[in-house]
Image 1 (cartoon, rainbow, N blue to C red):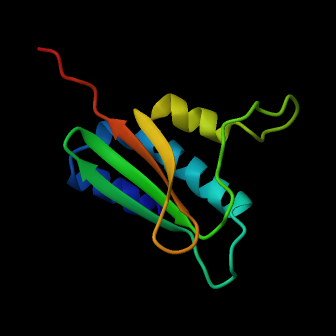
Image 2: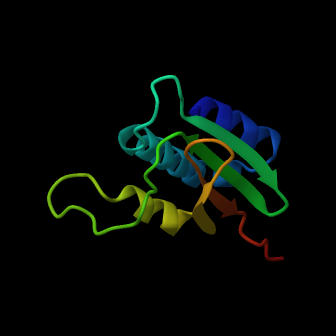
Amino acid sequence: MRAELRSALGEWRLAELEENALIVVSELVTNAVRHAVGPRDREVETRFLRLPDGLAIEVHDAGDGWPEIGPPAAEGEGGRGLHLVAALAHRWAVEERCGPGKRVWAHLSVRPRRG
């Protein structure tokens, strides 16, 4: 998945988004794998779309629960993923999809060039 995203960013000349995009996709996929309990025959799917001003990352899963930003755990490493997504993405949201589960997406925008 990470290699596919790097390749797409290179093709789309969006290398400046690579570091943030890799963090965002990793956090969204990790969240789906850890928390989206769904039928065993369902998989987590990722999609990357070129936008006029940047990139859309989508993670689809068949789980019923929707991710929410909550307070990070005082001890330990959990609870920070969606905080990172919110900080790095221009926008993000969770939406229903056709069929079971949900689609979590994040839009990352290129910075306006000054000159």
